[in-house]
Length: 72
Image (cartoon, rainbow, N blue to C red; front, side):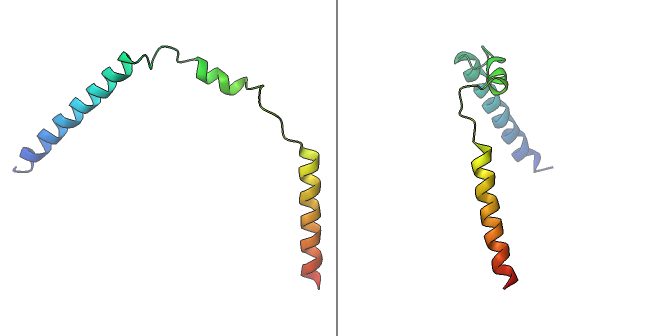
């Protein structure tokens, strides 16, 4: 029963902290545009696309050199 004297104030502190963080997020307009960032991932055309042909050929060269060392 004595543990309730500790747990109830701790719970109240966490509730007050959660309310404070929520109000801060609302005040600083964190919830204004919820969809834009989701669409940024889908339509991210401004990044350079990696060149797969040069990467795969270098990987094959490394693999073939490793396998030749394993045979000796």
